[in-house]
Each structure stands twice: as structure tokens, then as C-alpha cells.
Length: 253
Image (cartoon, rainbow, N blue to C red; front, side):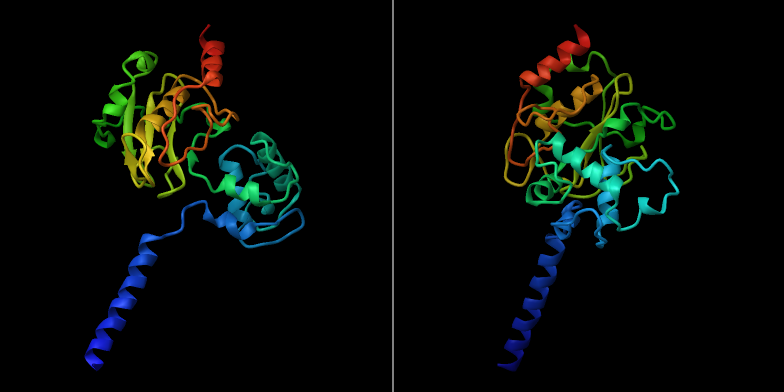
């Protein structure tokens, strides 16, 4: 009986360990602990919020050596950035991290930021040793019309992958692309991908369609049904919407 109990205890510990490994926190989960935070607060994790908002183009400290740019103080500039973020996604622009703001920030999304419209020319546009061919019917169905303005380079990379814009692991930044004439479109290899809608997986066609529009010059949209809405849900297939067509027409007509 004692040996049986020991085996059961060992298996229980092993199960808990495996579950901990499987259910690792997503990159944007840190915002959960900031619920209710507002200007004047000092809470662990606010520094990560500043990095998030700075990366996606909402926050900029004029002086890079500003001590507040990395600390956990919820200062005036951060409040202004949060209000801008909230207004952009049709949330209550209170400057406080309410439920709606938290849930929006936690969503997986495209990694392209408004202030990254120009490619990083310090990195060669083509890196054959890092390129993977994507044998996907989902991509083939898009035909060739979307590729006419770019020499398209598709790469599946994990974490740092050669372009100074590292991925962050499963459940955060799904993909990113560069401005016209660059042609690079990168997918996070740590994500679970699918051809079509599948639980807890991201449709490669939907994400590629979004990123190709960045290659053509389109930025993000605040219209939720648009392919250029920056947040992308799992188990979902999307296509071009009216706002996307209007954006393309404005650029090329």
C-alpha cells in the first residue's frame, strides 16, 4: 500500500509539473495584474506596460534617458498613451486600466507598429538561410495579384530571427511585415497554425492576408471586421472588408 501511495504521489507531482509547462503565461498576460491602475500609481508591471505601448506606437519619452521610461510609475505620459489607445479601439478613454482595456491588450495581434512604417535597412532584405517555404493551400489560394509589388519572402521564426524585431512566444505577437519594396513577412513559429478555422490555432490565410496588406502600404484599422484590424483571434477565418478596399483604393487609385 505504501508503494502504491508513493507512485500516486509521484504521478500527481509529475502531472502538476507538466500542466505548469503546458500552461505558460502568454506574453501579454502581465496586464492582468494592472487592473484598475491609473495615474499616480506605482505598481510592479507598469514598466512592462510602457514597453508594450511604446512598441505599438502609443508612448514616446522625448528623452531616452528619462528615468520614468522604464520604471513602474504611472505618470502623465503613460496616462495620455493609455487614453489614446482606448480611444483608438473605441473604449472609454478614462486613462484607467479597466476590464475592456485589459482584455483588449491581452489579445494576440500583429506586431507592426505605426512608427515602424520604414524597413530596417541595416538587415539584408533576403536571408536565404533563414527562409522557409510555406506549403499551404491557404496561401496558394490568394493567387499572385497580392505579390506584384513585392519580392515576397516568407519566414517562420522563433524569438530573435534576424530583423531586430524578435517574437515573444505563443499567444502574443503573431506576425509582422514591412513597408512596400521590402517584401519580408514573418510568422512566429511558436504559434499554433492551421489552414482554416481550428480551436486554439491561427488561420495562416487570415494572418498572411493581413501582413500582405502591410507590404502593400496599409496600416492598421480600428474597424473590427476589417482584415487590417490588428487583433487576430484563433479559430477564425477573415477576408477583406469594405474598410480594407477603401484603404487600397486610396493608396493606388
